[in-house]
Figure 1 (cartoon, rainbow, N blue to C red):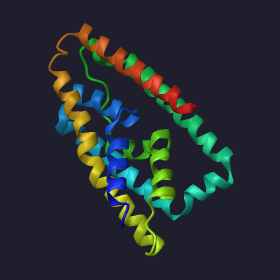
Figure 2: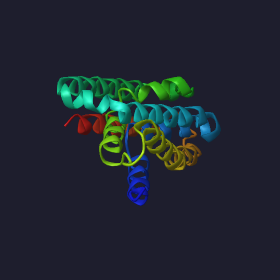
Figure 3: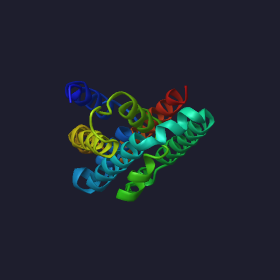
Figure 4: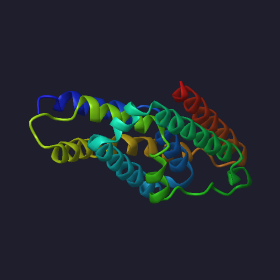
Length: 194
């Protein structure tokens, strides 16, 4: 597979740059620490791998054939991220209680409405699918590379959040942090809608 280095680079950039998953992990890491955020990290990774695998098998062709389906999914994802931002801004952390933890299943299912995850999956399917091997093997390979590269990249965001969490000892600091994270998530959601 001649495209291994570009594939690794693309997966690193998509997993390591700001996006809805990483904003969620920073917030979770800050409020719950890395260890309790690990199910969300694994859920994002598993959900992204399944999404990439299914897209490589042909779901991307549906989006090409029916652009309205892709547009509807993009709008649903944006609305969901705005709801998450609203919930984070009004988080119970201001009263001294951490916000609800994101579970493995919630993080995995979130990939279905995360526009950045769809962009990643469709690009992997359309640009990086290996030639010279059957589709199932190629889809599995691309999905596994994405998951292996993604895990340390998104873990860094959760670790960054855990580090920030040490400075959020007062309700005012937590409120300010939640407002910044909520605003960042809302801006990302609106940018991805374009």
